Length: 119
Image 1 (spheres, rainbow, N blue to C red):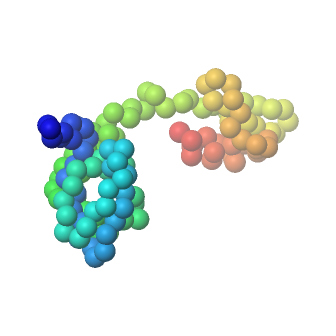
Image 2: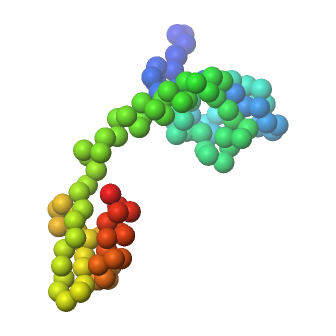
């Protein structure tokens, strides 16, 4: 029988440094990770609450993966928002496809604040 290897390019080498065992689903399989054990997994498969006892074996690799992930997300794909006058002194924050982002009409300073938060 041929052994399979982890062919996931996003997988990193992790090490469990805390006591006790940890059950997780990695690559679609339920596995139990024991103290001191190293294993391959993607960063999104490790819960943030366990990151104090499960650490990357090489923290530089994790930093590089996170940086590449941020570079892939470009601001060109971000939705564009604008202000729309509802009438009187009331305003709406509207996305490029015309969907209103606020539940109730806002005064202009509050609408500009929401617009800055979304942009």
